[in-house]
Image 1: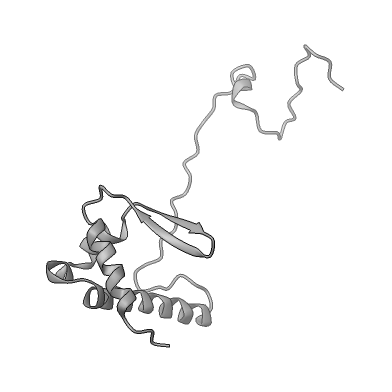
Image 2: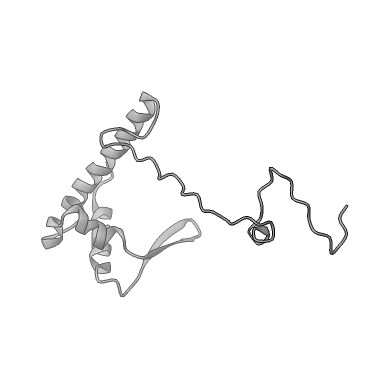
Length: 132
């Protein structure tokens, strides 16, 4: 048991805290961490073929939604926007999902320049018939 005022004895294999480095006569060194491994293009991120098939189906579904959404929900010039512009203007809108009772409301910022386009697109999607 240590008494107050006593120095803590450092074990030889223990890691020295930063405040004790100078008192122990050692200088701290920084060891660069290895960069994250990024898989090459064309390699899917999962390890088993079943997981890869599921991942590819999800990606294909997302691309289908991205391609069909402008045709179904948008009008005029907004229908010809590229995916990058859609992401910037419509998919990155600041909003809050509010749950009251059994309903969920999406509250969008009034000052966002494309809020009216988003609400009109939601209105058009709600008027479509239910496929199933």
